[in-house]
Image 1 (cartoon, rainbow, N blue to C red):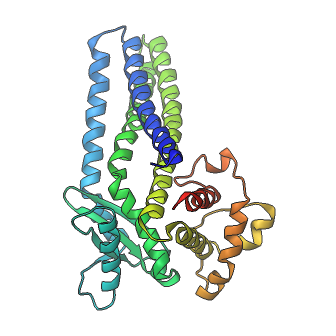
Image 2 (cartoon, rainbow, N blue to C red):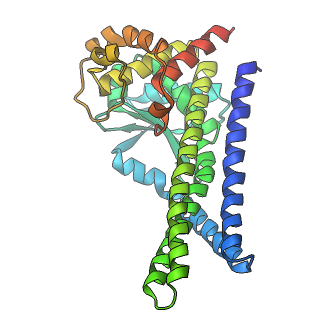
Image 3 (tube, rainbow, N blue to C red):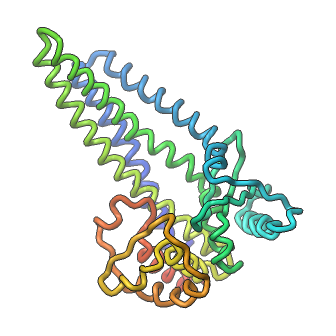
Length: 324
């Protein structure tokens, strides 16, 4: 195994373990301190964990059906006269990733280019591709993007992020409960002091849940980078084609980005007016070259679900150089 890939996996594993252990220890420890070691603190946190788990599980189970409605997605079968080739491409990439069965393939009728993997035990594994993405990408570029999305299914990213996301959810609910309890205590006769303390602790926990959410976003960025690695390793010429696909998606959603690269501002916009395929093709190489030399700051990535495009381009360059 490539040494850099091993380090990347280790960093990702340590980040996930850290947020689970730190979040759990922090939450239970705080409740034990507030309740002076009584069983009620453990019971309250446990009930919140269970509640968050079942709510998240319910959202996971019905989520694919809600996504299909919102994205106006229809399923593609192997014999589809228009999009059967897309199904065949997904099947080919799935086989390269060790899947015995092809994920269900959907075409989404929305006005922006995107592809995503989703699913649940009830709905099964799914991959969706939007119509604009089919229009602007070449087949080789689309195949690399599918290598990225199949990587999410292969790595069980939905399940991993769902488990990690329980921590800030529980802390938020706990903070909200204590804040509300403190607010009510402040209004109740004879409980002003206790109510004020609970109010402050609740507000502090709401802030802590926000900090943990930033940690979850960091883990999400690691998982997205890991999916890029998968697309590179399981699809021929994956690094190069992923770079071109990323640039094309950015140019479509934000057609003025090339004009702004001279002052160092990059951003991702959705539902922007589409530009022609010819205009996109003409600017792909210059945008990739700009990203190769751009150094995004920590603040630029702090609230992003994906790594900054420049980081992705530079990582894909390193993967291409190390590939045999």
